[in-house]
Length: 292
Length: 267
Image (cartoon, rainbow over all chains, first blue to last red; front, side, top):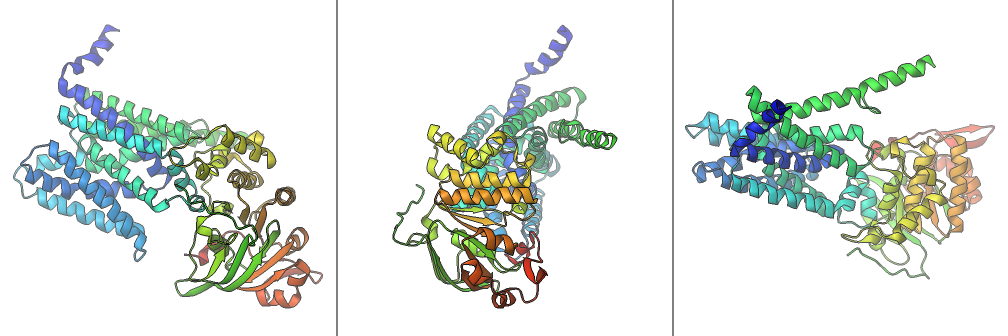
């Protein structure tokens, strides 16, 4: 037993690992709560695109601030909010299909970001931090920012719980109840944007979509009501963050990938064995049906 | 913060005049004029793509018309929260993680206001509505666990919780077995006793003439509106369907279309 405890506690003697753990849990929770709506509304592609679209903003911030990390949060936030509302407006214009529009903007902006970063000499290392995250490099100040904005996002989600639920489940009902549907839709886009900015340093833009959809999708296989889905998704994401960081420490794999892999393994397990909606339990039920 | 307009009681619950709607140059509704007094049950019939859903959405204030006016108790539908639109079942995501109670409570949120939480009065509304439609036993079920008839009853309960005075039901009978259809038609009678005005889009002309006070026969334009016997004349039916009817022993039973594909004509 003491060996296990020692095994768990020993990494915590490093300040950067403590901060990394807190960041991973925080990001996991906020991504999972917002991600529940991303999953329910079928916005996974939007979330992925939005994450990639912030790269040029982050790259410009990186050049302007001469390599400092803290200002990047603001650059990411600004770009994400602008991109989310921009994508929202373009998809509504109806001249080309929504996913095509998103695809064009997403790839174009991503390429612009890579182009900007490639003008710097230490290009490869910096780019990989943006793409795949660097949770062990989170400063105390960045952590404070992440905490404030995560709290803000979750507060808004709770405050407008019944409105977000209604516009997601039945937009026509929301309109007949005279809710400001497009305002609420845009508010949700902005919340996803803030979440992307908060999560950028932990998992990076390339793996962001996993944090948004994987824990939420896992939880949706196990729950029947939205508050439980959100709570379970948050728990799964926080757990993935912790397990992923320990795996990263002991096995020596990069942290963002370790976190996402943990969440993916949990999803796969639940997808196969979930009591009601799992693949195998469905098969068993089917066979039982045939036998009877 | 939610809009709330005063009802002018001396005005009809629904007054539609010269209403036209186009989608991408194609006419969905063409110069529709009729008015409806409170408390009646109206069957809206017509072939697929006749504009039934469009009419409902314009009346509900969800879709804007290109010309003409819709008045509900004397004012435009956009200010009213007393109009309920009950979606076609095929349009609903039944895997959504909500219980029957959650869905019915959604009908209350205009009354709750921003940052408002359900109070005892709201829970009472939800419980009574569920009892009225006979769904109190299923209050905690996830919506995907319900049968077709129960799903429809849940939406009626939601409309009751909304305190809706005008309910627009988009093909509630389609795809239900006949006991469920009977049950639902009986429930429509109960709603009438509560003073609720119902408009029901349906394909079953016999049910329409048997269970409804008025028939609105639609095929982009209004072909007839009035009592069943006056509207369902061979001449009118020929105009509306131009041969797309199935009949037995010379008696028209139903038109030949099915669920869902009306949407192909929208957007």
